[in-house]
Amino acid sequence: MDQQPSGALGFREVDRDGNPVPPETEGPEAAGTERSWSAPNPFIVLLWLLAAAMIAGGTAPLLSGPMIMGPSSGAIPLAYVVFTFAPQVVLAGFATLVFLLFWHAWQWQRS
Image (cartoon, rainbow, N blue to C red):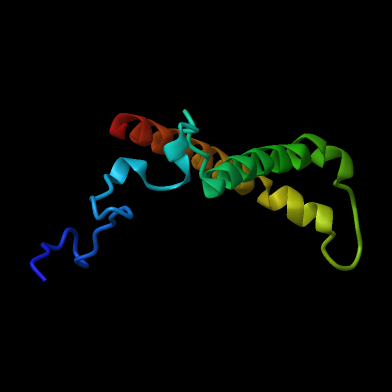
């Protein structure tokens, strides 16, 4: 009953002899199989892929736009709509790229 709590919950781990277990020996990586690198954030990887897709996807209609634009009758063709929004997509891709570079610099500065 004269046990002092450690941590916020008052729980301490002991071995079978009642000796406290140091925190360094906990978990599956205690056997010396520590990784030297951490897994990348999947959301950041997705943002890199999205930035590349926006830049490439917006540049393609801009380069082929004059060839697909022509006289049409009736409704507005989809190619015209894609050509109209392509500069904004490229700008968003470059803005995402700049944001990711600043984010990586900030993460590098923290470590």
